[in-house]
Image (cartoon, rainbow, N blue to C red; front, side, top):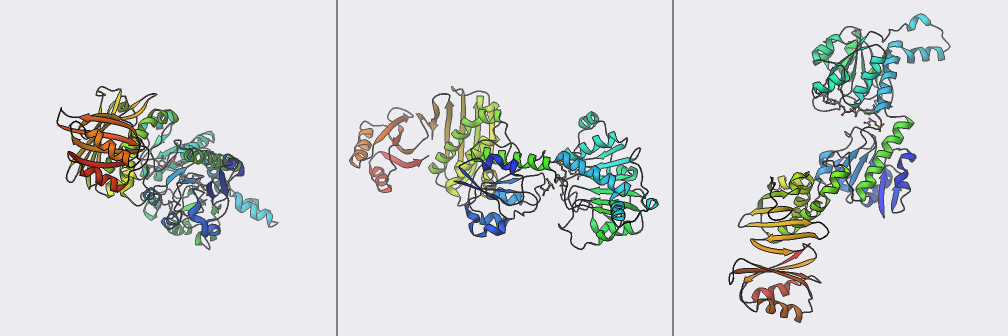
Length: 524
Ligand SMILES: NC(=O)c1ccc[n+]([C@@H]2O[C@H](COP(=O)([O-])OP(=O)(O)OC[C@H]3O[C@@H](n4cnc5c(N)ncnc54)[C@H](O)[C@@H]3O)[C@@H](O)[C@H]2O)c1
Ligand SMILES: O=C(O)[C@H](O)COP(=O)(O)O
């Protein structure tokens, strides 16, 4: 039974695909309520409230995926999740419109002083002259961060007859022209805007972006809005600008600390606040919960996910094309790791023929994961394989060749160890399966599956019989046997597929046979 912990409040309608699956148990509780059983969950679904820290990940030893029903993953230690091999996904589009609309609601509230007027009327006052606002029409709106939400805000601002100025260092000219906005520098935006709204993620670069220096560059009487992340506008820095009237008003949906407690900003009449409500609409919550539930379900069924933060994302179409090579590469990694039972410095992979045209990042990661699995104690998978290889000082490289070396496709793997170099070549043949067609310098043809026994020997009559007799005497049945040699009477190999794993004692017996140079058990 798959167990999923839903640790923050989420739409039941959105979770329906998980709730309806009889193979899945969904537990809707806070982390603190299931402390004793944290090691039993396969997936964790959160919004922004639950902090997915390294300590929590350490306790959730069976965790495979964290799903964030929303955009921002700043409450998740993604680096730690990557190290532990846990996939992190989010739902990037589901709450875009709601947050853009909330930004507009905040903007209107700010310039028309709606919250203040509301409180006044509720207090049985009727003071019309105290709440004179300003129009949005004709005003200059500065948008910092022009991604999904920023661009939806721009569309709405144009409908209100505003002039839109955008600062986003990662925005391409072509996209800006297509949307028809004035792209400017940060200084230009600060100097021109009557209202500034921020829509960036919280990063090292954006933390305190609107701090004392940049606030001083804004127009006197500017309005500021933050519906993105607390800290992009420096809360402490705002105070003197509000006190001296340089900033006419601020609307905050997000705070550096949530909840903000008894924050000095809350005492200002012209500071309008909401408790992180940007995504809090029925529609957005159904959208994000549905997106994340569907993605988690796909992932748990072994299908590709499309919105991963720490995995390369694959379309269904690409996934179907690479799936066979992904499996072949995994098996090749496992075989090579067992054969090269020594420290390894470098892994070189060459994709030849049809596989060279595919998206190989996943295939390479699969091979690395197969190689590293027997060597590391922790979970290793496509998420963390490249990182673990680097940590262990194992370099890896990919090369591509149009020529499939007599096959439609081949993956050639060369492993450079401290004392020896090992090469293997595999191919995937449609309707036939995976084959290893070159192993350790010998042309051969075997399926990389099950209990394999590799024997290197001298090419002499009677060798196969000797091996067969010993195995037979110990009730070990040989399912298949492939042989390869470099030249008549020279070095040769046998690759046997057995019906059961071999005892180490029997391996030692086989090693004693004269003219046998090496015996290796290989398990795939
Ligand atoms: N209040 C809420 O409830 C709520 C809801 C959804 C999203 N959010 C937050 O809103 C923000 C925007 O979300 P989105 O979905 O539009 O993200 P997005 O990734 O689509 O857009 C972010 C934009 O910021 C730009 N950017 C990055 N660094 C920048 C910098 N230093 N200066 C200027 N621009 C920079 C990027 O190029 C990108 O275009 C995020 O912080 C997200 O967490 C808040
Ligand atoms: O990043 C987001 O998606 C928003 O901040 C929404 O957060 P929430 O899911 O906690 O409302």
